[in-house]
Image (cartoon, rainbow, N blue to C red; front, side, top):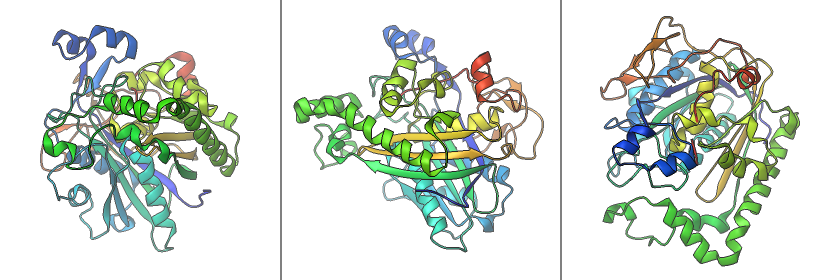
Length: 407
């Protein structure tokens, strides 16, 4: 769908301290063979910081950077890939209370790793449905440190990371224009995320561990020879979607400056997802995610914030945001950069979440944020780059993108 009048006003991110895969091997959590084959170098681990608190920290940063007032935000959408807190409780209203504290609607979009983009599409449609609506806050957060998850082995190609991220959409102004957004589903492959598990009682209520590897095996068993179609059908559906959205944005696929994707720890893994859609993996950013991990619903928002915060965007850049989640559902969007990203009024130092050192400019409200109910932790991506160097220049010099993940 072609979009007119919706802007990205600001982004925010919360990345907790990282654990190196070397340490994980030494502690017996992970295997050296997986380090070598999957590419991960470090993983963001939040310990006991709840996912909604990380969303609050990211949302506060994005909102402050946006320059908008509370009255300018008409909707809050929260997205996640895993459980957020008590049963029967509303995480988006907790986030709303900890940020805007206004009587606007707040809801969850439950689309797994595709959640952030599905949330952007939902918020966009909500804003376009009524002329008087002017802005929306979209958040995502996950903490995979629950006893029901072995983050190091739940996915054969990924290590699950913790993070929070946010974006403010606005009809008033922004540093980028949302040119097009759309989703497509492949319901014949829904078993990929169901596995052999009974639908009732829910797995978590009987103490079952999250095991996405078993889900894949179950799909192969249930679909038999037809399971091999997933690569072809996924690529064809995604490729058609990309062609549609770039055309609606008034550009060719070859005009794309970068592809924002779910985390991949190796170029080969990223190629396996992008090449069937006719996309060059060189447009992605494996090095960024390699130092973060696969952060569930947060990956697209983290990469977007990284490009904005580290000065890797230039006016005229066209970004393709692309993700997929349970269903299978694929969502994509094209964004055009029209001004330098808004990074907020604060100047000074910010804390590197990986090392605890300080460098560069303070992101948003400062080098530390108090997520939600009061746990203090560091915000931002923790590295700095010269503003305006651009994505292409960063790739050519090897600077500004030394991080990565899998999905």
